[in-house]
Length: 242
Ligand code: PEP
Image 1: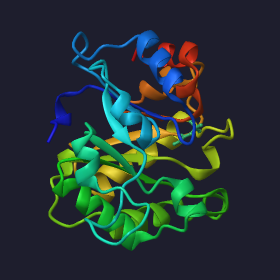
Image 2: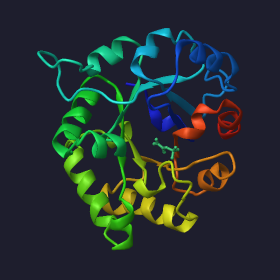
Image 3: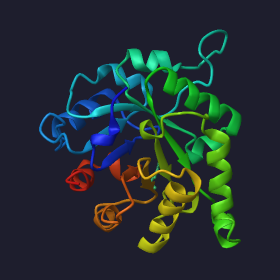
Image 4: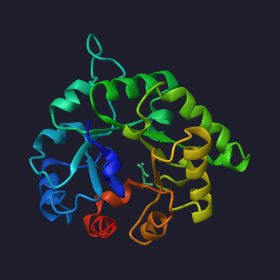
């Protein structure tokens, strides 16, 4: 399994249901990052799974946007962690809020996906986050605690997972928590829930070229998960200057 503790910061591009083979080729050609030159930082691109076999570059690491909670068998439409590893993935996003809300994913399948990822030497990027109502009612810490305690397998090497704190009310909305709010939650996850300084916690939600620096400067933010802005290479190339 890739050792992520050596990286200063980790930036993940989540393309969601966007992209094509020509777009991917253009992206690879124009992306201004090369992991053979900057090995202090980590860039992971997560396109739709059908595009992954077309990635011949070693400029960045490859991640999947999801994986099956099953290992193999009669599960039509599923893609297993073993299959993702075979096509070059080192990372997999698990429990993204869109999967939780639109596809009704729940803790048990998220837990099984994390287990399968770890067993296949894929680094899980476990997404957690409260919605707007939960934040208004000051329930956000309880929600995060619940998501983490029910989704993470016991006895895992905490250094080999990434937690993405993505407040649902921030994803795709242009609303971003202030620096103190982000710092408070990252501290809560590291110190109070997981009791580890080593665990990598990244922030996601409306990250843009205009705000990424201020977020990345926060001492307990280990990186960023970028959705919409990762599809605009002019903008994303600014963000991946780290
Ligand atoms: C995401 O998809 O995880 C995300 C953070 O999206 P956006 O950056 O568009 O808010």
